Image (cartoon, rainbow, N blue to C red):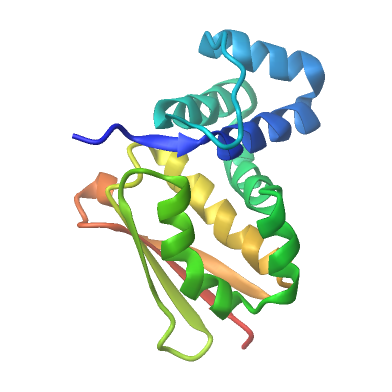
Length: 175
């Protein structure tokens, strides 16, 4: 069985969100609460439990309403990706998402359907294990809309945690 791992880039982006929102003291408290002693390096893989635990810590310490903002921040602060999306349409980004996902995460699968006009369906299979993780993906979708200067809405329509085969996020845009 493959360990559920995520690139350090994502974990560090969540840490940057915590520091920006709650300062160095917040970041220190988060890291101490997680019991992390190692330095997270962008190019390496780490247990996805780190990401999940950061999200749980944010919810527990500062409230669930900050989880969507964390997801938005992360997608906007992934280095080169953040710079490139400013020059792409939301549809083009969505179509490249499954490949990008598989380069960052070692588990689950992402599928995207852009066949309907002004609507994107993003399906995540075996990705979310916690409700805060689900909410962070809403933030990721909203962040992509903001980065591409696209007006739209994001709605979660299915959830694997509730017995569905996958989590589905519908992005309606440009209407």
